[in-house]
Image 1 (cartoon, rainbow, N blue to C red):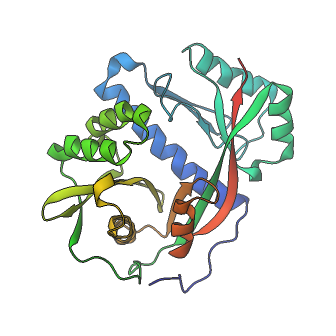
Image 2 (cartoon, rainbow, N blue to C red):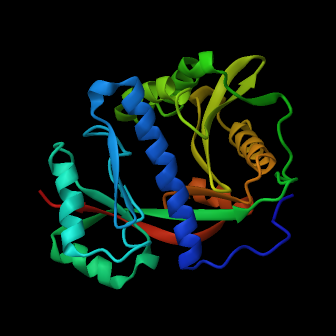
Length: 277
């Protein structure tokens, strides 16, 4: 189907809690995998006032919080505890904050010296057992979950797909080694004639499917690999009993437009805040 036949959930606090909770739990599973595979990394996560604080390394994009102020009111004392968790590890203090957490939280962050550094469109769409996309796919592209012994292949494909961002290559290569260790998460490859051309990830939590990390190697772009990966992951998630899919993108980006084209709605625009040194 192209557009979902049933109406989407309202964009309210309950929806924000569900989406942010799913992303928080997915990232917590990633941090746990890092701690098992690379115990010397010191990877760890804690929960404070319903907020998940993740440490995955000083420069990791996972090192931040999720759900701040959504599940419980956060005071200065709780922020101090979270900030200490990051300071003790020499990491920057960053929070991804949904506007549904309220203006008072943003005022508190401003008072403590935080600055907004990034905006993200959080999008969602309902899933049914037969969910998929009505758009015509390139039938020469085959999409499949990778096996435990193919995580390195997935990582190399993803690193090549994000080659315009060389600073991410180390993270992606390590992520390949962590893929087989992550609970409730899968890595997908898109192939043409047995050769990988695109990669993506999927995390499942409490009926929510989080779609992330989709990329195509430069020489294979504009052939429909992203559409094939999206369709396959939605179908897989629906088959696992998920009733909602979510994904995140930069506001106004091609990724956002593509998601909206295929039935996703914007739930809210999230702000990433960083504590000034």
